[in-house]
Image 1 (cartoon, protein in one colour):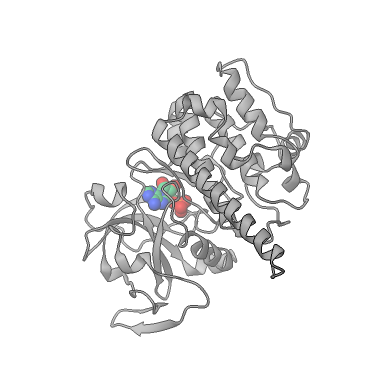
Image 2 (cartoon, helix red, strand yellow):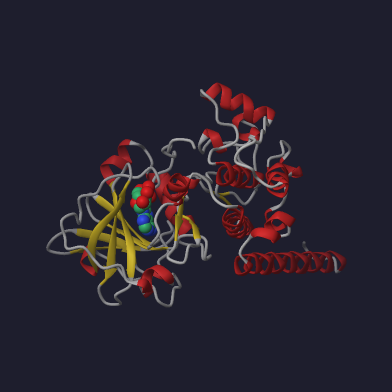
Length: 372
Ligand code: AMP
């Protein structure tokens, strides 16, 4: 499979934080890892709204100054017992941590302001925090809150006990069809949930996915996501291997970007590497633009799986399978875990019902002569 590429993300481009190194390691409690619900989470953090519109206050303590939102608890490092490092990224490190009053286990991501500023990614980080803190889905890593001191920004994240999906894929080479279909169905549900909120991820790849204690895949990185109510953008972002033709050609793009990304991911799960991988950027670019999709003889993959990948990787975004239709595709239905499939199908049915109700309401308003 492809070597791990550093995504062009803010938090996801990872880094090193010396904040808590050297403290006694924690025993990971199942509680925090298995149940990311707001009920069990640090309560105030769950309601933190780090939006620009929110009032901010500054609290000066003996040690340092911490500024955060007033409509929620003001978190400081003293609220956490910080344990072993879970990993490192470009801007800091991620530590296992326990919120002291509740005992809730979280992952604390430490980002160094100086490095964020040097790379000019503060705006991107702000957007990532803003978007991720508002999303609630079992396959999207929760961002419970954030705080900062003079040098660092701390993100309070759901702890994903089984770590990076990328490493699991590297270890096993590729996934079985049931495992691939299960992850794809779960991710299609999570992405459809995002799209319903006009959020496009735009950087779906194994490096941006973590795994929860029960094996649930979780989208962990929203560094390149965008809230685009108009539905269309022109910025080039994401990793080349996962970019769709409309993005590499610099054309306008919309939600179809994530369908393509999920198709590339399905291929990588099944075959162990991305479909348009080539010796250089130019060649990868050329293969993407032509949709030069080839299925190797080995490993043997079912015709249903190949049909699914083909349905996702269409040059025309409008011809791609919709995210809600993913959980109806015969290969997904035959292979995905029953509970994951049912959840995705129920969510899709809920979205369809909401869309139909909205349409009926609009028609009624128009018929009554009111504003649409
Ligand atoms: P990042 O800076 O987001 O790339 O994170 C660096 C590494 O820390 C990742 O590659 C993971 O191994 C680990 N990590 C990040 N976030 C979490 C989390 N929420 N739970 C468990 N491990 C994490």
